Image 1 (cartoon, rainbow, N blue to C red):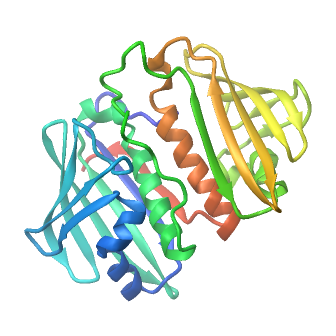
Image 2 (cartoon, rainbow, N blue to C red):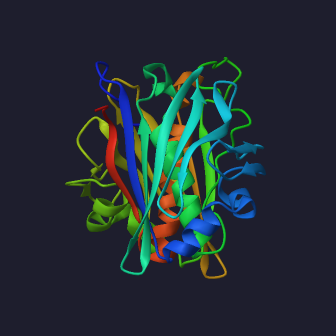
Length: 304
């Protein structure tokens, strides 16, 4: 499900998220270790200064044996930006976070790269989307959207004992008709999935496509209004799989449960695990705030 770079470029990731809080608040909370526990890691150690660091640990922290658990602060400019170093596959990749006030809110802008081409399998854009979505959720809703579990995440070291499916759930504080509509309304899909010309025929065997044939959903195999959808999924040369999404009412709110299954090998799950977490985290922001605020300015673009 992750987006891949061309083979002939050194990848760069550029994302932006709008936080509807003033710059002073966003800057202070971003650098607050207690806030970091809600979006970055379960344990945080921070020395906030040029030459300092932010270290993150725990199952929710974006770290593996190949991805470092420490962001080195190379340069810090008060309320404007921070240049970090992050060790990935033995290379010190650099990323910049810039803070820019706009109309009473704040843009948090990320530029990460160039990134080692061997790190493509980690699907870093989706990890950044999860981190940014959780930070926005903490700032505006007071709690994280959906954390990713890194305890068993090792995309370069898959074994035959690893899972052949993705199972996720998220609690959304809205009636189930709203998240169901974000999944099945063509106009909303343009914002949710960023699909240019989605096709949605809300019936069994009805056409359901986001981008184009062979790039995701194909047809509905289940369709129960406001309750459940299931659809076949084909991406590129992958074998057909299925995605089931349930919308269960909980006292007027919704438990959304996603099950992506039918993979023949555990390797097929790589990218979909973090990809679906990123999508569901954005879904929560869309339903509870009206917008995810996340813009993809450039995914895997060429390093300048």
